[in-house]
Length: 394
Ligand code: PLP
Ligand code: TYF
Image 1 (cartoon, rainbow, N blue to C red):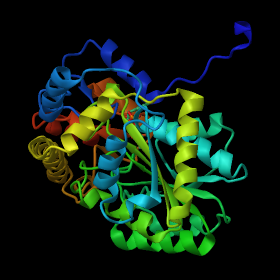
Image 2 (spheres, rainbow, N blue to C red):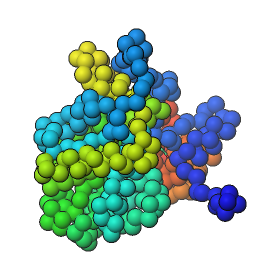
Image 3 (spheres, rainbow, N blue to C red):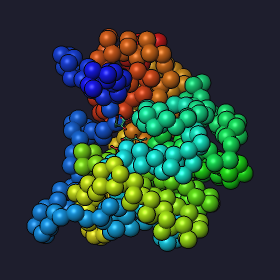
């Protein structure tokens, strides 16, 4: 049997981690995988997570199974964090998943189950795993224009024109905030326009939100998702706690199915539980429990939000420093978009050859599509990157 297996393509982002490790240069700079790093290059365990883990260690008396959808307290807390009061709780079905990836995977499976003919419209570009998982599940994908390589902002006219080619029942995958890999995001007026097209054409929104709190703030980053949830008949939301709680390896995510018809909730909830059972029975509990402990404790929550805000502001300051430095070196505003982008990533929009030149000459590791992780920088390395960008002829 095994001899029939074919080698599978490796994940480019994860491959880059290894190439970086193998580079002997002390001066190398890792702007690859999307993991937050502080000025010392460390991905810290957040203070509130440590405190909650300590409390959990003291108080937890059993590790018996929880439920197919995970702990309801986790779902409740996350629904509130993401959706606030944009929809009634009774209209939301939710299940814990192994990370945001698990939520994305389960959402795609639900789409396939509910409407096998649905196509999924994805932004060009999008997170490579979206496409990889959709291909694996034999779901047809259609790319919609999203990134304008001239301005490095959103090609909104192109996006709208492409969404107008979708048919009733097709799904449109949107990034809730902090678009990966581009860093370019919709403003609220644009969200409203997108929702108008979705409703006009009978399209189903699916939102992937993996960076709430990394862009403009915890509330601000959820405005688009909340608008969609409140103003479309139904939507799917895949959320990740990996980044904003810093619990990457705990595999903590949530899939939500929102319907304006509260009569649909029980069926949706049963379906999410069923899908969990088919794939892994019970979702991981440890990270989810820490998240609900934090969100339900005023002091822990305030400390978590403060640390997240520090993280967010640190990345914004690095963005501004990089844009300023490039303006100084080039005498132009060409790189001003770096300060406008939000989240961990920016797509420079350069050729793979330029990316390779920056790696070879300056030890700068960004993903081949010219995505860089801003959190991989610090105030000392920003000028080095700026010079390398100029030297590579970007
Ligand atoms: N969706 C997007 C757009 C992402 O960038 C990520 C990356 O971390 C995820 C989902 C899922 O992350 P995880 O499975 O680690 O929670
Ligand atoms: O885009 C990123 O870098 C993050 C982390 O297969 C990641 O989302 C990268 C690759 C992958 C899973 C997560």
